[in-house]
Length: 118
Length: 118
Image 1 (cartoon, each protein chain N blue to C red):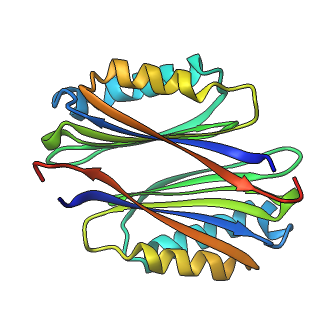
Image 2: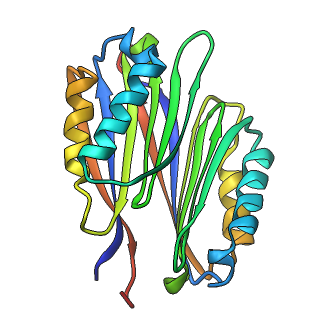
Image 3: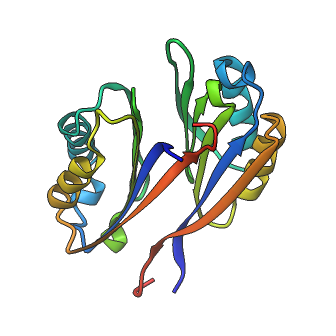
């Protein structure tokens, strides 16, 4: 059985609080991660919350990337969902961990769409 | 330790193939799921793929909902990511399973942002 999709769930802790609240920077890093992973970006939607926090989606032809930040805890949840073999989600993960300056992180890899007929 | 976010990962199988390729309907159902769960919708981004398949994100003030469909397999991957106590992600999941006519489904619940300092 092959999986149709692969999903990396990143828990990023100990991140810089100012970075976690900087929509412009976060969007730039998410786009860089998508591009360097070999993904084709189709659209994005980023939102700044009051008093703090940013949510952002990057829609790619091969699925999506998502980030939610909690600056007050120096924490970000990131998902990288890809399908096909042309994208390297691990490359995107590596960039995000590095650029967001996470002191601690974990990555959970899930397979989506395990179909017997596939 | 409390979690900052809760994520439901739905594997929807045996869905109607035409429904899985109907962007308008999928968007409507995703919006309905978000609204009936008590979420505040901030934006959305849906894309139709050629020859088939739809990807869609709904950004809510409490995080996001996401769907990717593979009509050729009658399969959809759905994520419902929420934070706070005002939203009922289970309600959104129930609506999506029902409206998309999944003959088989599974739900995996994950906690995101388990912080010792929280």
